[in-house]
Image (tube, rainbow, N blue to C red; front, top):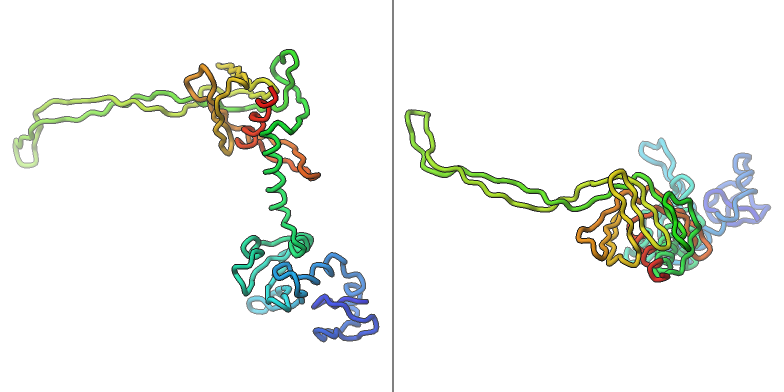
Length: 303
């Protein structure tokens, strides 16, 4: 069998013209493409990812002013259209906008392999990664994830192991800031045209509020027992069992612990990546606040 370079459908080896779209199959330009058409592309066009039934057919359209050629695939059954974007295909049009595939992947450019997965009830790589990471976070928060030891910048205690280490971490704490506001009261007298002056008293009052300020910069180390910050001015040794709550942020966490009135903010943790494995797949992800929160919660459960 040979494959038509336009519609992608199978034809008999003796055919000179495609029995589906009529393109000539025996010219020298198409010979190599016809004989070596990738198997993945053959599978990709056999089953529409939107309706899961109809085959896809290749079409070429001229772009603006006829200077470019746009390659698209269209489902013969539901009319869904996929536009070629580099090596990927973008779902650009469907007749039924309530279709779940359009809701999930409309306007997205995915690899042929991903569209094959979707056509067979699977999901895209990005959604698979999201599911795997969420699954790993749940396991981490329940203490079901193991970590490899790392070199520790702090002296470890008996049976203590270091897992994560960050440099150039900012320690923030709330600081009271006082502002003074003043006003001048009294009567205004006009002495001459364009000249006036006030007679009265000046009054003022002070207000105090808290602002987050950087109090130090240094290293942060997570062990199976402690979270240790070592800076040029401050050393904070936090027993994981003393932590009351952790508030996650994109680039840090806010930690509240026993016998410590002020909340401690550690900012800059997302500059370090951690390698994780979930459902047999491996990823390198930045240590965001939610990642560190789940890890610490799991370590606390193991104490």
